[in-house]
Image 1: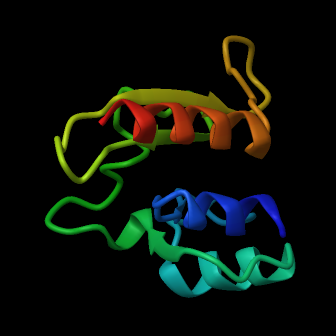
Image 2: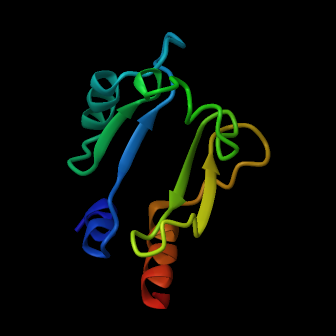
Length: 112
């Protein structure tokens, strides 16, 4: 079972957000899905940050985004961000693995 399948089995949902494409154009859901499919992923929903409403770029402008991507864990029961981490090449990003993220998801689920 792939890590993303284990994340789903743990009760979480995966939402992929594409902030920008390889040409630095605002991300779209279609380009996000094409990218995620190219990675071999079969799980999750795609969001194009250039298409977010009512304000495009809301994910890129969020305090969680440090030049690349981020993971946030928001339990449905509380709707509170319980955990946040960032990905990317700039210094200061956590760059945790899918396995490490799964551990955090399971820990939060066990505490609810």
